[in-house]
Amino acid sequence: MIEIRAATPDDAVAVSRVVQDTQAMHAAAHPDVFKPATADCFPPEAIRSLMESPDHLFFVAAEGTDVVGYTYAEIQRRPDSGFKFAAVQIYVHQMGVRDAHRGRGIGSRLLDAAQGAARARGITRLALDVWTFNERARQFYVDHGFQPYQERLWIDMGSVADDA
Image (tube, rainbow, N blue to C red; front, side):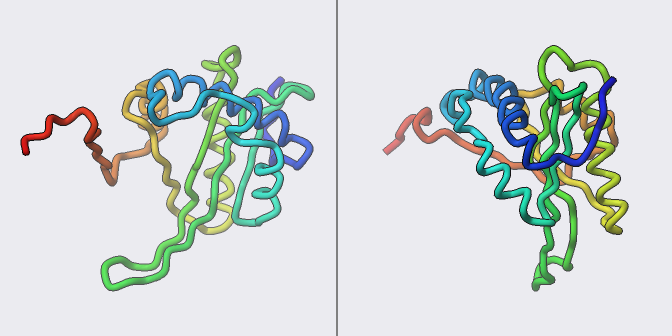
């Protein structure tokens, strides 16, 4: 049985291992952007350090003592400016489920944990980024009610012919 719970510093090594699954997929799709999947991608000591802040939230999906998925989110506060109103949101930095455990509702339950953390704090917005190549993740988030609100575009200047 899979248990979703707040992560503890003792989970940092296992979370770091799950990160490598997702990193490998990203590195395969964009090797020019993403480094190869190694323990250095999101090392346990970095995870433990982030866990010390109450604004950084980690949840894990555990099957017994085996961590099979995680969510890392952050409470972000934006001050009022001349352009935008002040806002508070929970931003999901990362989420991953081990390959062998996908398709079992674990991602949905991890996302529910982040949403529950938002509700418990009176925060009404959850946000995240998803890479356009990752159709499965994009569809997962759409299926869970996420809607696009901003779009980033890029150009690889190394592939553009110089007209000068």
